Each structure stands twice: as C-alpha cells, then as structure tokens.
Image (tube, rainbow, N blue to C red; front, side, top):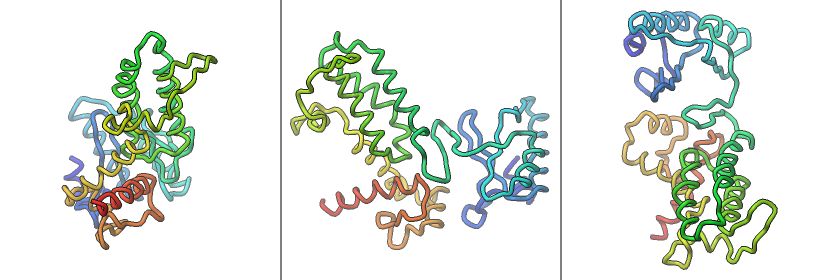
Amino acid sequence: MLKKANSQNLISGLLPHVIPGGVVSLRYADDTILFLEKSTQKARNFKWLLSCFENLSGMKINFHKSDLMTINVDDIVASEFAQIFCCKKGSFPIKYLGVPLHYDKLKREDLQPIIDRISKGISGWLGRYLTYKGKIILLCACIISIPTYLMSVIKFPKWAINDINSQMAYFFWGNVGDQHKYHLANWGLITRRKEFGGLGVPNIKEYNMALLASWGKRFFINPDSDWSKLLLYKYRVNSPNLLWAKSEGGSTFWKSITWALAAAKHFIDGN
C-alpha cells in the first residue's frame, strides 16, 4: 500500500534520489518507523492511508502510544503534524529494537541501563558456590550476550567497558558486597585466548571492535543494499574505499564503524 502510494506521489519517503522510491518505512516484528518529508498535505495522505489499513485489516493503530520525531522542523509545524496524526511529539534519543537512536552523541544515561542489567545479573549469582570453570561459563555464555546487540552498532565508551570489566572481575574472583578478595591476575591476562595463556573470557573492547568491523564485510558483500547506498551518498566511501573513509561530521553509528575499520585496516595491512 505504501509503495503504491509512493509511486503515485501521494506520499514521499526520505532520499528518493539515493534509494529508488525513498525510505518510507522500517519494520521489524511489531516495531515500525514511518518516514515522511516536510509536507502537511502528504502527511494528511499518509494518515488517510493508515486509516484505510485499519479498515481493510481490522487492526487498530494506537496513535496515542506513537511518537512524532522531527529534525530541523519548527515547533509550530511539528505541532501541526502531531495534530494530523493524533499523536504526541517525542524527543531524542528514541529506542528502536533496543538501540538508543540520537542525531548527536549518546550520553551516559543512554547506556547506563545495559550496565545495570549486567550488574543485576551478576548480583543474583552465588559466586562463592561456583568453581572458576563454572564462573567462566557464566561470563562467556550469559554476561557477554547482554551488551552484544548494542555493541554491534555503537562503540562503547571507556567508562562503560571499565564498568563491565570490573563487574566481571569482581564476580570471577569472588568479591561479595564489601568483602574484597585479592585478584590473583590482571584482567587483561584473563581475557587472553587460551593458547596465549589466558582463560578465554572475551575482551570487551576487542569484542566491540570486531562486531562493528563486521559491517565492513557486509558492505563489501552486499553493496547494492539500501544502507550501503546511503553510506556511498553521505560519506563517499568509494573514494578511495570504505577502509579509508573519514569519520568527521558523521553519526554515532558511522564514527563507531570507522573506529573499528581503522583497526581492521592495520590488521589487513599486516597480513
């Protein structure tokens, strides 16, 4: 329905000169983001299409639980759009699929919930009743999986990595409450691979870097995808290539990727 309306110029998505038809919607499960250019007439057309969808499908859209997000739009115009869609005006950052989205740098309070989840998970385990091998299994299988999704799209700041490492180290060495136990080895040694004398617990910083660098592989494998076209248009990554792209003026996601690819570039040069 949206594609046909877009082809008839009833609505318009973002960047139609980059992606054929423009970006009108992003959908995953029950999470949906709709995009629209700054046009009140096309906004009314969009609302009419949503009403048609409700009548044809029998499902109802809860506009009162929906947020209208605007960028570079006056408050008066934003209020007019919100009135058309019968929803409230939201503010950044927003969460989509669990990832905080912002056009600016994310703040500490945006990432703190992930750190709190890790602390809560560790505090519920009775570490003094577990062997070191059992602790390693819990750290590798449970704790590392909590921030994995977010680390695949955002470079974690130093404070967040240090907090996670501290929580993991306290659990591993058996710290309980205010009772402190001596750490018999540096955490950097614990996170080494087993063949290099470590215990195989993932290094958070390197794990974060590897997840972000995997976007470079996806870019080269599927250069015709919409997100690849967007990178080509905005950051000119074909001059000369993605590995030499600049991070200045980019989004948080783009700066995270370029940080990881800078390390991957040296790895590739060295091999």
